[in-house]
Length: 411
Image (cartoon, one colour):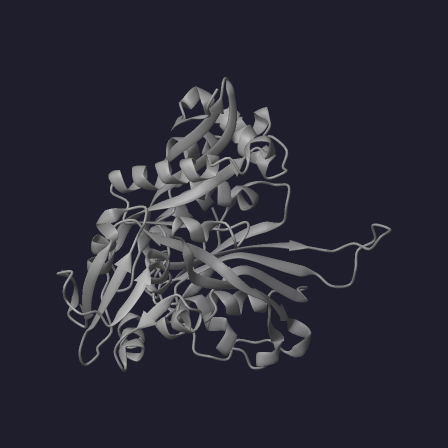
């Protein structure tokens, strides 16, 4: 019997969840997990496609219905690809290819301009048109080395938010400041509920702080927790670790005010933070720059444009003298194959007989789209061909983005 690829019905969500978690060599979710409101809500807020061998789910992919900031300030519909897995009994049989094709075409039909994902393995998703469009850092700040914020910070006050006020407070302030750089997404309610479980609970020492401007308007927030690592005998070690989960501000100066507060907490020795921007404000704001240690810098966002015309015309471009014409091929979505002229005034599709300056696949233009991957680097890596002198430099001047892209929300 051939494997059937179809949309997942609500009563099949749990079977699909068990399938993809088994594919990732993970345990199934419990009744308690499914009793939490955010889990079924996240399934309802996604386009979900599954593969069935008879009555058994053998593969699954989904795309959250997100909205993402692009360079210039526009917010576009985006499919957040997630919950991807095929049982080991059905791999290398074309199941994942069929699932991804159905998901990506379905997301485009729903109006998604692009899709992003976090890749468990870096060799899988290039064949579906995805490419790295943004990186992140995991950092450690050692207070023993004298780590103080000495750069200017925003005026205002900081308060600890009581547990019963965390959800309402964070959802309101994050809606104002969360779209801080290209690649950032609007966090839906179910995601806030999932990401704020620790500070709203009582099992862990976790806290939320909010920064308010001199007029009393909340314009930034952070979430952190503390732990005392133990040795092999269960005895507490000397160093207390502060794990920072979120730092968001209306400006870099607001973020630095939040970092300053965290770095001055009593009893803390080590501060660790994940999924931070490569050009994080705190990196250049300390009195001792060596105290800020990037323990890991790697790919965060894998991006795939689903509607090239809508994507290229949605974003803005940096000032530059002249234009660059880019030829793009997309084997999955024929409408994306064509040529576009990009200048400081914007992007427009041009006739197929117009000479092009650069040629690339959907992977190449997806990597460069958010402004964090240079066209020059793509050319060095064999992902782009240049046909006119200066075309790579001009493309980089047009597409570059500052601050660098970063999502900052794991899904």
